[in-house]
Image 1 (cartoon, rainbow, N blue to C red):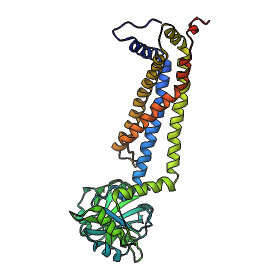
Image 2: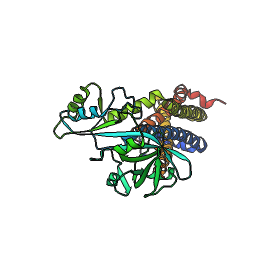
Image 3: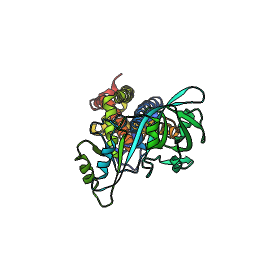
Image 4: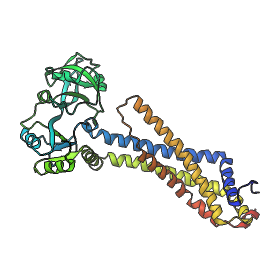
Length: 389
């Protein structure tokens, strides 16, 4: 096989020849690319869904941005499993130096009776009546201040459908108590996908009867000029409560979901399956491709091509199909994520750049690992192979 003419130095001409060999066998090239694309799609899509589920597991932490700290019982494992706090603990937190305000926040589950005669579990979030700390991120219809009206509630947009296509002005029953829908908000729903309702803290504890200790979390805002970590340490020093930043509380909740449930294992198996499928498929096809072109490599070796140059040709071919396959797989996964976001599906998909970088490294590692046998075969090929029958 003659070396293609051109101005490039000899090794670069061989690298160009490697690409021509790769693209020349379209069947194996397309099969390699599609196999790696499927592996990349599986890793990215499942990884994005897994990260989205972890974000959903943080519940109200997704929507509440006003406080600097969340104060909870020290034994709280994650955001949805807590021990209620007393009003006395709220007052003690308010007395800590550096606290601008501390407000109660309620998070509970109740049963809503629908007009059709059926019922629906709803998540009730009770926010402070005065400061409205803990409020939803966006109001779509009505005013949040309308919650100051008796028995008033604001329903999350997608939850209106879950409540029998309810609309503003409708009166519903929550645990046999009257509730009037005064507004519609937009907020991320929790892990269980229950309908989400906002109301004042006082209304929330009426809708969901509790004991003497009624506060799920205490939301704290630090004063300007005070170091947040110092305020946090002062609250922790009270002994019977513990303060977390939103990020710390979020990471604590995600860690609990990954360790205490089977979600992490199940998604890990699926992602690993994509990696293994890509590895086996790329290794078998790439090795077959190399064997069929072994005589060409023997010719190049007989013409004086050095072994490192031949190995560079194989590596270039592997990196090329790996990059193209990854681009297709990640692109399809990205389209899926955009479609889910546009449709405002309950299935949240989170696509951080770290996932893209990690899956790209995994894809390249897959094809490079799969090409090891091919590299070894080319390195040991004898120029006499060209004369074999």
